[in-house]
Image (cartoon, rainbow, N blue to C red; front, top):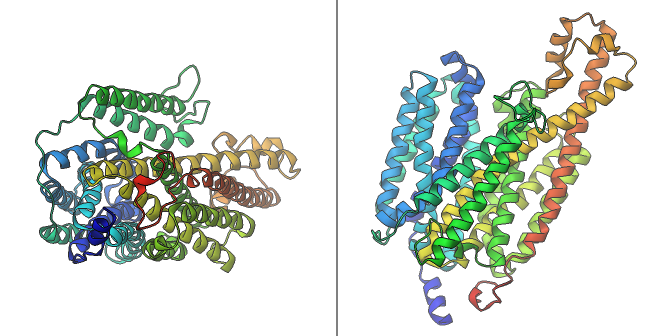
Length: 541
């Protein structure tokens, strides 16, 4: 059996089919990265507030996370290659809608369509890689998906920033349309098994997991605006004075547990589940999912934190943000591609623990050296080290899931990956925002109490209950509408500057602590190397 496996792994396949799969990942990631870059242009053209445009971003993520498991079953039922071509065409239609959108409502509709397409593309990528590549080539192909995400982020910010500045936001989505057309053309070089009409779709499970993910995502995304515990004025309603955000999170967790209970009952009854729990059947697969959730959540938190300080605190442009994040994104791109070379020498457990060791050290280092200027050499060094760890981890844990499951469960692995990544991204961004705002509010409250230059009469004119990150220039504008003296304005600016930096440092330290705790699930990753048969390892490994 081992010789057969070696023979399969040594049979090399053309990389041309992978080009289409690589571009499909670029297509989705470029679309997501292009949305925030285009936000300012849409706000100006449509005459709507930023929250109206950001609804399109949220809609995309919600639709992907809620439908990805259903998408995996549709691929198995109809056939992966057929569904892949259909949804790539749907993505092209959504890009065309973005280019021609007369109102922001059409933008939201377009992104809902793109999200529905991505919900099937995500598991399709895994299934088609498993169908077209084996052994070392399969590991390399999986690594390319991680590098595609990083490459898309860099290119979307650079190209989108340039086009948005000199031409407009619509041409950015002309690139998305061109990518969709290219992916569709390359799809004819892919091979795939035919669909199985006998595959059933568990509607009850689909409703449970979809509603649970929506509830969790909406809850986490609104922790900052609706309130972490007590309902804020912006909350749509309250429950005995409490914020609905944590309530939605609890409901989401309950629905998630109901999904697993229902799925186990369905399997026990001999019926086909929405997603096979066999992909999470041992501690090594569950450890890979936990590790993936943590590393994607940390990446989302850092991707939120850096633009927050550059654009809001420093008042600079998205193009400046892309330049500041370029060392990180390029490092992720290179590492995600090259880490495959380490699989022959080190088992996943060693690489995983080392990866989280690097992200922990990088976040702790950033907390130590960071200032209000993100372009210092020590800060860039911290971002590069974090990028090495993050790029290695995303590729590694994905590869563990794919190699641990048989080929017929590749679609289920893809759906688990899509659900985990989208939920982790939302949670990481939301928790980072709520955490930093809470720390900032506490720091400013303490500083105001201890600052003799800021009397209670002046503080009463500023709403400290809605403290958020603002630039010093914006703070001066706000204080100009009060009776603050120049000395008091300078004191308030000093408080704002020191409180922001302290909040950033503490936030990074908390992220470093989470990263350090992630070494525990990483220690449960497999110990086998290429050439060894995973199934011969104890199931609990």
